Amino acid sequence: MCGIVGYIGYREAYPIVIKGLKRLEYRGYDSAGIMLYDESGLKVSKTKGKVSDLEEKSKEIASSKATVGMGHTRWATHGVPNDVNSHPHLSNSGKLAIIHNGIIENYEPLKKELIKRGYTFQSDTDTEVLINLIEEVKKKENIKLGKAVQIALNQVVGAYAICVFDVEKPDEIVVARLGSPLAIGVGKDEFFIASDASPFIEYTSNAIYLEDEEMAIVRLHKALKIRKIKDDSLVDPYIQELQMNLEQIEKGGYDHFMLKEIYEQPNVIKDTYRGRLHANEGIIQMAGIEDNIEKFLQAERILIVACGTSWHAGLVAEYIIEEFARIPVEVEYASEFRYRNPIITSKDVVIAISQSGETADSLAAIKLAKEKGAFVFGVCNVVGSSISRESHAGAYTHAGPEIGVASTKAFTTQITVLTMIALRLAKAKGTLSNSDYFRYLQELEIIPEKVAEALLTNDKAKEIAAIYKDATNCLYLGRGYNFPVALEGALKLKEISYIHAEGYPAAEMKHGPIALIDEQMPVIVIAPKQGHYDKVVSNIQEIKSRSGKIIAIVTKGDTQVRGLADHIIEIPETSDALSPLITTIPLQLLSYHIAVMRGCNVDQPRNLAKSVTVE
Ligand code: F6R
Image 1 (cartoon, protein in one colour):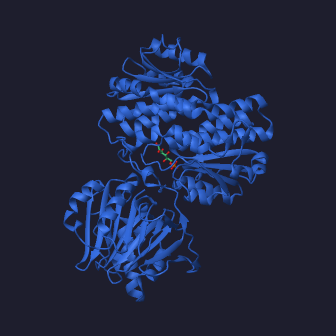
Image 2 (image 1 turned 180 degrees about the vertical axis):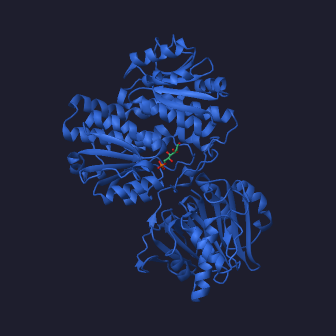
Image 3 (image 1 turned 90 degrees about the horizontal axis):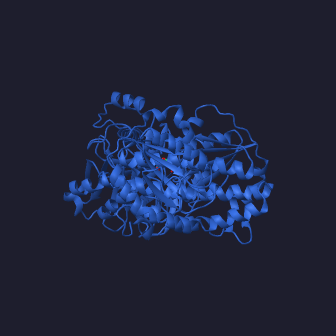
C-alpha cells in the first residue's frame, strides 16, 4: 500500500511525478503529496484526498522547472488521512525529505528518544520519525546522507520502500527497500523510482528491482551502486527489460479499469495457457512444474496460502486438485497460517497465490513454510514480485497489470493456472482416465470463447442491478466448485458497492442464514446444470418458500430454475470443474453495475488498496 514516485534527470519533474502518482493510485488514495527542488529551494505540497486534489492544491508549484522531485499516494496506517500526515515528510531542519511505503514498527521508542534530543513532530506518522532519525544520525556522525540512511535503517524494525532527498546533495536520491516494492527505471541521464514500473513505462524499459535489505544512491551521471543495508557489501545491479506496455495500463475507452479487466478475460485466459496447454497433443507443459514434478508427486499434501480473492481461487484449486490428482489439499488464510504455529514439514508443497506478489501476510507465510523445509511454489501475476522471487519455483498468470482494486481477471487466470497444475499432476499420477484428461484439456482450450459468451450477459446484469441497487444485504449461494464463486461474488459486491453480502455453501443456509430471508433479501444462486444441480434446486425452493428474491445463474436453456427464480442469467455450459471460470463472470458484472449505479468509486473503493503490503 502507498505508492511512491521519484524522478531525477533533465525533464521537468512535476508532470512526471503527478502522472506517476495517478498510475499508482490503486495502491492507496486517501492523501497525496509532492516535493520539488529547484533554484529557489524545496517546495512541498500535500493534501488529504486523491491525486486530482493534489493537482488542484499544488498549482502554484506546477510551473517549477525542477528536474528532481518525489511524490506519494497514501493508504493510512499511522495517523488519520489529513494534510499533515501526508508524505513527503521533512526533517526538523527542513533539509531532508522522505516518502515511505511501509510501517516502522518501533517508531514509538525511536520517537521518544528523538524528543529527548529536542526533536519535534508535526504529524502522527512513523515516517516523520524515520526522517528525523536519519537527520540525527547524519548530524551526530557528520556523515553523508547515504551512510546516515544506512545506519538509521539498521535501527528500525518494520517494512519500507523509501526515497530520501537532501537539499545539500540535490543531484541524488537515496532509496532503500525491505518488504515493500521499489523499482528504479534507468534512462539516459535520468532515473525514475517507483513502487512499480507503471510510472516510467513510456520513458524507459530498463528497470532494476531492489531486493529486500538493499539500498542505492541514485545519482545523476554516475553508475548506480546497490548495497546491502546490513553489511554494506556491493550487489551487481540486474537490469530487467520490462514486459509491460502503455496500453495495458490505460483504460482503453472503458469507463473503469474494472470493466476493462472484466472484458479482458477471454484474452488473458488465453495468454495464461498459451505455450503451456497443447490440447490436441494432450500435453500441459509448465516449466516450474516440470522441473519440480517429483516434489509434487511425493508431497503428502499441498497447502495453499493466500488472501482475499486469491484465497477464493485457492479454494477452487482445492476441489480441483483433490478431484483430479487425488492429493490432499488444505487452503489457509495466510494471515492466520503465519501466526498459528502450523505443522509444516519437508513433505509439504506450499502454493502461494497472489496477484500482486507483494501481500505481506502471504509473503510471511511462505517464508515460514520455507524455514520449515517445505517446497514453495508461487502463482503470481506481477513479474519479479517479492512472492515470485521468494518462492522456489512458480508459474505466472500472465493476466497483465490489474489496476482496478477489485480483482477480476487475476481470479480467473489464477484458476486457469491451478487447473493446468491439477491436470498435469493427474496425468503424471494416472488419476484421471485418458478420455477425461483429453476432454478437460479441450474444454479448457475453449473456455475463453465461453467467457466471451458469458460477457454477453452484461445487459441482463445491468437490468438486474437497477432493481437491486438499493438492497442493504445480499446472499450468494453455491455448492461444490461454485461455493468459492459464491464467496467471491459476495466479496466483489461488498468491496465496491458497500452492500453487505455473504457467500455460503447453499446447503449450509438452513443452519442459520435462512433466518435472514424475507421478501427484501436478494439471493444470488449459482445453479449451473453440471454439479449438484438437483440439490441446488431444492435450496432455491427453500428460499422461494420464504419469499426471498432469487437471482439465479443457470446454464443456457435451463427451464426448471427459470420457473422458480425471479431473474435468471444464462451462461454457456461447461463441466462442473471448469464452471467457476464462467459462473464468476455475471457476478463480476452485477457487482460492477450495482456499484456504478450507487455512485461508488469502482476502481478505488473506500478504505482499500490494491496491494496489501502491511499485515
Ligand atoms: C479483492 C481483492 C483482494 C485481494 C487480496 C490479495 O477483490 O483484490 O481481496 O485478492 O488483497 O491480494 P493478492 O492477490 O495481490 O495477494
